[in-house]
Image 1 (cartoon, rainbow, N blue to C red):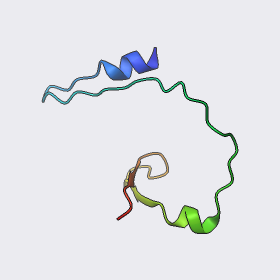
Image 2: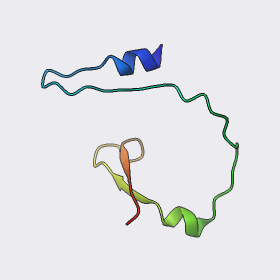
Image 3: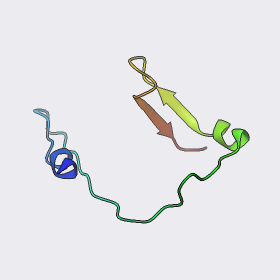
Image 4: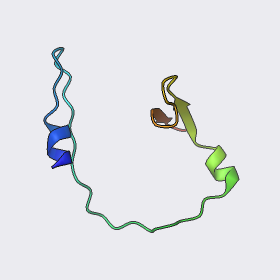
Length: 59
């Protein structure tokens, strides 16, 4: 249901959002070192940066 709601979003300016369900199986509770975590480029939004952020590509 959530995927359908997100996937049908369209703004007045014409921005369309596409969403799909990923049914892949992933390893749970995988440990990541502090060094590896520090390599991730995270840009936090000024409004609730703990919830709203971008993960930028590595250069």
